[in-house]
Every structure is written in structure tokens, then in C-alpha cells.
Image (cartoon, rainbow over the protein chains, first blue to last red):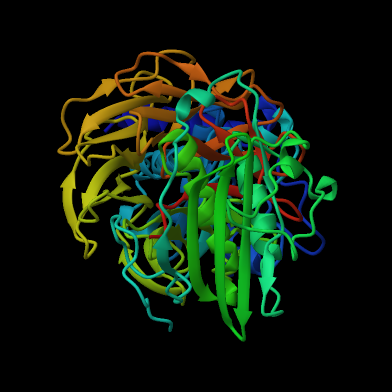
Length: 173
Length: 443
């Protein structure tokens, strides 16, 4: 694979871990009361669907792995996403017994079926990049939720951009 | 369970009505001079018809729902204008219901060109309705039916008679003796499956799942639905047998099992499945086993829709760089693009008649409904309305579509004829309604 390139990006990632806000994507500031960073209950017991079923809102960046974001109708990983995936890979290597479910999401423009397919591509892109970074394929599963589990509902680019995400759920099963 | 007493009128038979009550059509009256489809067309005004209250025989009630539903269907068809009943001059209980006994002057003075009159007889749970269609100026009977069934069948009798009237005037059976399945959040946070009559009435909840349910479609025989559900925590394909709403898993391949669409002959199920993140269209057997992969392309390929002869599939693909509508052979070859206008086209629905494909096209950030001939020519815009108009599904007669629209706020279902000139809101109330699927005729 592209080891030289991967090594270079990892070096940048260590330097750039604080600069993640350069593209304007926020960290999970909409977490509701009581949730901290690190291994929270939510991240262990289920992902976005389980949260919705129990009536709790989803949140970006809950758990130890941070979300990555996409342009409209795209599944390309930009530089920020690749940096985030580097950091996520580092954490996963430090916790080698942990499995992760990779969720693909979309904003609500476009049709339900197309967005389910697009979410699948986004999740697969993230997974494949983590595999390239050395994470075992067997530790990861992907699932697409399309536009069905948004974080927000406003018809604004700010909200849409938050929904165009891949979310990582770590768990023991 | 009621049994048919007489042989039904000769037409292609399907299976029992979904409610489990067999509706018997006993006798057809001979038709008089037939007025054909030259009356109707774009720009022609609606044909004025009066729908008289039915005479109640034996004092048992019945008939009110029949005339109300009949009037609603005739108005929804866009072909008729129903003259309001508060202008009627006659006492329905005492006036005649046959061509010899009707005083047609009482109706021509209201401007009616057509008239429906009849009688309802209800004994316990048994309901018999006799309805006749008359030409007011010629003073002739044009059509008539006698319906027998249970009291719960009254609305369906009206839907059938509306289709009969439409057939008489246009030469093609009307669409109203059918159902529409859809998703709604009216009952909770998650979308659940509901079924209603084609005229928007009689909404029944089918699922109560507290999980994601997507993309319902009818089985070829109309006895059930196929849909994608996350009830097992993965987007799997299930069938739901009606009316009991019993679930059966059809396909749970890893990743997407999306948008199952039965072939018209009921032997193949077109689905979107996933190969390492890439969506592809495939065919499943009746038992859910993978029969054949149809697309093999890095692009997103979703939303298969069968041609009525089962020889082709329309689908959505972004292989050109943005989502467009394509057609391919049912064996997978012969891919050709059919959407040429617009740069974002999705959700194809192939009409059961008339060889047109409906789809949603994004214009100015929102969607409008378009149709195109299956060879890609003759693009026509159907909606030009506020909000986003999506997910078209054709009526069994191929002249109407149901679709979702956010033109007035939360998504509701709308009915339109193929031209878009006659649009009507079909659903109302709380929540968001989406993903409609129009069944075939019930019998």
C-alpha cells in the first residue's frame, strides 16, 4: 500500500490534532448534560439507531473516536478527514481488543435510497482508509443510515454539513 | 367470510380482497349509448355530475358513505365536477331511481349532464347497493351495478363504481379500487408502514416497530408488502403478509438489502445490495436467494423499477457523475440513459401503462416530478410547486401518480394526473408521510 504516504500523514496528524477546526467543522459541542469525552455509556451500548430508539438524541464525536465529514454528494476523504482517521487509528491500535461500527450518514437532500447508498460508500471509504492504516478489517463493521438519523433538522448548510458524516461506535460485541 | 353468490362479471380475477371479505358483483345492467373519451382532455372543463343520495330500502340505513365516497373519487379523478347535494331538488326516498321514473328536469335545471341514482338495502351486516349512471339530457341509462357485501364494504363499492363510471366515459378503468402503502411518523418518532385506500381514506397502521422502516412496495398479487427494515439492526429485506401483518425475512446480506421491487409476474425481486460499500442492483428468487447481479459499476446504482412486461428495469445511477435515470434489460445488459434534462434525477417509477417513467428531478435545490418516455424522449414536467416533490408511484391505470410533497410544511402525499393539472392532497394530520407505493387493482 502507500506506506510512505501514510507515514507522512501520521506525522502531520500528531502535529495537527488540535487544528481540526480549520475547515469549520465543530466538535461535539451539542452533547447533552453528563456526557464527557472518552468511553461514555452511549458509545459502549449502541450507535445512532439505539440512541434514537431509546429517545436520546445522537451527538457528534461521542465516544473516543471523532466523526469525519463530507462534501455534498461526495464520499471523498478530505485532509481533515484523513487526519481524524489517523487519530482514530491510533486510538484503535492502543485498544486492540475493541471493535468498531462505522456509520455512514447523509444530509436530507436527495432521495432516501440514494442517500442510503451514499452513506454506505462513506462508511466504506472510512473503513478502507483505516485498513490502509493497519487496523484489522475484522474489527470493523459498516452500516449506512442514509438521511434517516440526522443530528439536526434545519434546512441550512450548517445543519446539512453536520449530517454529512461518518460516526464511529466502539463496543465490545 | 362471505361467499360469492353469483359469478362475477367477466374480468380478470385476482384473489380475495385484503380485508378478507369477498365482495360479490351480482349483475351488470346493459349499457345504453356510450359516450367516449372525446369529452375529456387537457383544458376541457370537468363534466358536471349529480350524485343523488341513495334510496334506503327497508329502513336499514346505508348509502350515505357510498355517495360521499363516490363523489370524492369523481372529483379526485379531475374529470368530473360533482354538483353539491344541498342544491338537489328531489326527496331521494320518494323519487324514482330508474330511467322510467326519474324526472330528469329536476337535474338538468341544476346543470347536471350525468346523474347517479340508486338504492341501498341494509339488513344487519349485509349490504346491497344498486347504483345507476344516467345521461340527463338524453334521459338514458348508461351503466349500472348491483353490489353485495358486508356493511364494511360500502366504501369499496363506491370506489368500484367510480372506476366503472370513469371507464364508461374514458374507455379505461378508473384507479380507485386500489390501495396506497406509505411511511408515516404520525404514530411515533420512527417511520412505520400504513395502508390507505387510493382516495386517501381508511388509513390503517400496519407496523409499530420503533426502528427504521424504508421503501415499502407491493407484492405482485397485492396481498402483502416488501420493505427494508432495521428491526434486526441491519437494513434487511422483509415481507409483510396482509392483513395480519406477519413478517418474514427475505434477505439479510451484509450491508444494504434495499428497495425490493417484485417483477410483474411475481417471480423475481429486484433489490439494491452492497459489495464492499458499493451499491449494485441484483435479482433475488422468491425465496430470497441471490439469482443474478445486474449492475457491476463503481457508481451508486439504486432504486430499480420494473417495466410492465418485466423485460426491463429503470434505475438510478450516478455513473455519469451525478444521479440520472437509466434503463437496462432484466438480465442486466443494454444500459442506456433516459433522463437528459436536469443534473440530478432519482426515484424512477415505470408506469404500468403508457410507457412513461416518472422520476424526481432536483431544480433549485428542491425536487419536482417529471415523466419521460422510456426511450428518453418527450420529457414533461408534472409538478411546479413549492417544497420538494418526490417518490412518484403510478396508479394501476397509468394515468395518475401519488407522490410526497413538502409544499405546505411537513411531507404529505398528493395525487396528480399525469399532466399535473389536477393535484390534490391525500393525507393530512400529524407527522410526515413519505415513500408511497400504489397497489394494483384489488380484484
